[in-house]
Length: 167
Image (cartoon, rainbow, N blue to C red; front, side, top):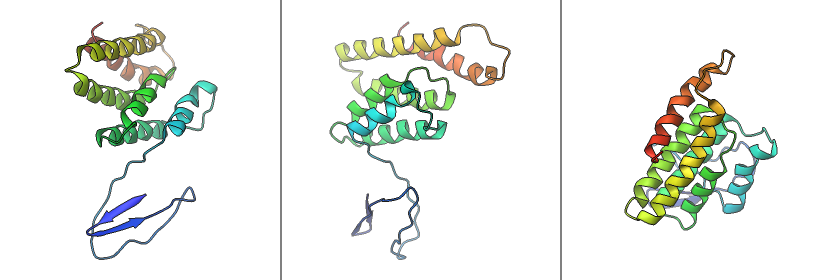
C-alpha cells in the first residue's frame, strides 16, 4: 500500500493479518483506505460462499463490495469489471447489509452507464434476474422464525430494487 502524506510517499507491505507501522508525526490526520483486489482474488472471494466456504463474515462481504466500488470510482483499469463480476457473483445471499451495499454499488454503476442504452438494458436485465432470484427465495410471506427480522428488512429492499431495474 502506498500512503501519500504531504510530499512524502510511504510504501507499506502487509505481511500479516494485523500489522502496525509508523507514520510521520508531522500531521494529525485520519485516513480511510480501500483495498484493490486483483481479478483472481475477487473471483476467489466472490465464489467462496457458493462453494460452501463460510469464512467471509457479513462485514467482510460489505467491505469487499465497498472497497471494490471505491477502486472502480477511482477509474483504475479493470476495477469496474471486478465490481460487476462481484455483483453478478452474489447468490444465495440473504444478509441485508451486504445487499444494501451491493445495490448502492450497482446504482452507482447504473448512473455511469445511463447514457448507453444497450449497456443499460443488459445491466438492468442482469440486475432484475439477480433480484428476482433473491425475491423468489424470500417470498411474499414473512416466516415466523428467527430469520424473519433479517428477511423483513431485505424483502422491501429487493422489491424496490426490482422496480428500479424495470420489472
